[in-house]
Structure formats: C-alpha cells, structure tokens
Amino acid sequence: MAIELRILSGARAGQSQTFSKPTITIGRHPDCDLKFDATRDLDVSTKHAEIRATGGQYTLVDAQSTNGTFVNGKRVPRGETRALTQGDVIGFGARGPNVAVRIGAFTAFARQPTTERVAIAVKKQTRFLLSGVLVLATLLAAAGAYDVWFQHQQAIEREVTRERLRKMYAQQAVQRAEIERRSLNEPDWVATRQALDPAVVLISSQLRSQKYEATGFCVNASGLILTSRHVVADKTTRATRIVTKFANTRDWRTAHVVAVASDPTVDLALVQLDDAGKYPVVQSLASSVDIPAGGTIATIGFPLGTDIPMGQSANDLVAKTTLTVGTVSKTPTRDLLQIDAFASHGSSGSPVVDGHGHVIGVVFGAPKESGGRIVYAVPAERITEFLNERKASGK
View 1: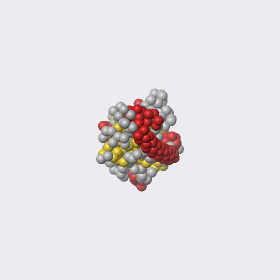
View 2: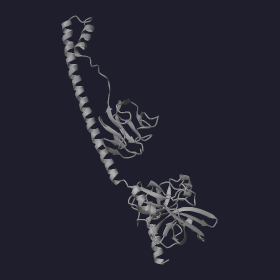
View 3: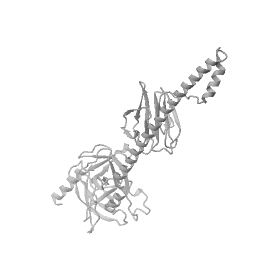
View 4: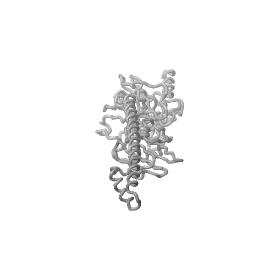
C-alpha cells in the first residue's frame, strides 16, 4: 500500500511524492526520502521525522526534532509515534511546512469524453461481434456506469480535499496560538540585561603566582560583591590583589576578600570594594530554583575575560558583558545547578538568571570535555545559606 505526501506550504509547496517503502525519512538532510529545502525550510530539522509502514498501517515518529512535529495541530511527543489516516496534515515545526497525507492506490483514470470512449470501444468490438446494435447498447450502458462511478470518485476526492483543508486550517490556528503564547511567555532578555548589567563586575585577581579573570555581581549598595571562591582564595591563602570594574565603565576599583563559604563544596566568596560609595545591585536573589530541566535561563558575565574585544586596551577598556541564553540541562538539586550555556575562563562568578531577572545560581565551572556547554553553578539555596551565615557571624 502506497502513501502520497503532498507538500502544502514551504519552499516545495505544490509538490508531492509517493512512497511504498517500509521507512520514509523526512528532513533537510540530502539522504532523506522527503527532502525539504536546506536553506529556506529552517524550521525542519536535519533529520526531523520518519513514517513507518507496519501491518498495513502508517505511523509517524518524531526523530527528536528541534521544533516539533504536529498532526492536525497536535504535537507528537519527541520519540513517540502517531498513527496516520487519510487526509491528515503533518506540520514540521510550529511555523514550518505542512504536508497532506493520502493513503492507498493512485491509478490515474483517463478522462476522455464518454462519446469518444464509446466510439473507440465500438470500433474495436464490431470486428468480433455479430450484432452492432447490441454492442453499442452494451457499451453505452457500461459508459453510463463508468460515468456514475467516476462522478462518485470525484465526490470522494472533493470530500477528502475539504477535510484536508479543514485540518490544515485547524493546524494553522493552533500554530498561530502557539506563536502568540510564546511571544507572551518568552522572557524579555533585553530588558533583563538592561536591569542587571549595572551591577555586574569584571574581576582581576592575583592568587599566589596565578592570575585570574572572573565575574561577580554586587549584592549590597555598599559595594559587597558575590563571586566564585576559587578566583580569590585557596585553602590557606587569599588573593593579594583584587581589582574590579563595573559593566559599561572604565575605572578599576580595588577590593579585598571579606568572606568565603565554610563548606568546601560551595564555591562562593564575598569581596568588598575599598572605596566607600553607593553602588548598583542586582534586582533579586531567588531563595530556590523552581525551573525544571528544559526551562530557559541566561548567564551574564565576561566569558574569556578581556580576550573578548571591547574596543580599547585592557587597562582602558569599557567592560562589556556577554549574555548567553540557555536551558537547565538537568533537574536541579539544592547542591548543584547544571545548565547548557557557554562558559570559559572569565565566566566564574557569573549570575544565572531566570526569565524574571532573579538570580538563581552562580557559575563556578565546566568539564573541559564538554566544550563549555555543560556548565555547573551554585544554586540559589546555597547562595542564601552563605549570605545568611555571613550575616549571622557579623563579619
């Protein structure tokens, strides 16, 4: 049993392909059976989905696509299957191309006028039959029956087309609603950065013979800065030189360590600016992490430190932060927040923020083999404990 896939929208709109193989691969990869345009149909993943024929039934499987696969407007969960029926409309991504499904035999019937069909048939049959009148009557009856059958087939085809269009319009309505929902719920990272940027600090430190560049952020208007412990202290020694520069400013300000976390597994420290003044602070420190795995977050800081071009020499540069949007890559615990957002030297101490601009973690490291994509952060619970410990000690 064959299946016809008719492309309704996208770069290949109006084209169709028929398959009778057990597995049909779909995507932008050149090896896919149903290939979409690699440069224009960008909502389609390289290998987006498969259609499988099993026991006379076709099923659709989402191949872990980035933007999702939809059948009649309803998303197919990643890796799960969905049975296909006549007239279904498949969407590849919420805003990607749509494909209509037709299942069965696709013999193309000749559409000659009835009289022409009869004349040809009579001419052939009169060579073999004795009674021309009987032959003509028989063929006219057959032609009439054929016309009835053909009109019935056309009616079925029109009904299938109407059903297909109805499903396509329904899917488009769902897609429009999804786009509107995203636009309303998607975090405004531009506004978040503008709010947090003034309180983010570039840190340069000298710890024994090692020089560090890192990030911190001000948590108190008197100039108290939260950062990673390993850039300003080790087990026995504290940094002998610390200078800081607020984002979007040129001036270096000296500072000193005032507290480090007593728990060796908590990579946090507090640095105090030496000059008295009133300094910008972050909006809010969350008391816990309520974002599940897959939720969107961002980091703001100085990955690669002053190696990132900022327009001036290292001593005269205006510190410009880098915002990186990512996700929570593993269900967070009170001891560890794992995220997917680029990090490198200079990222330690960067705040991890949620869509409301609340600080939910502090970056402290990443496995070298991850290429900076698996990043570890101290979660909000531990940050709160550390700050409360300092308040209780009065230091």
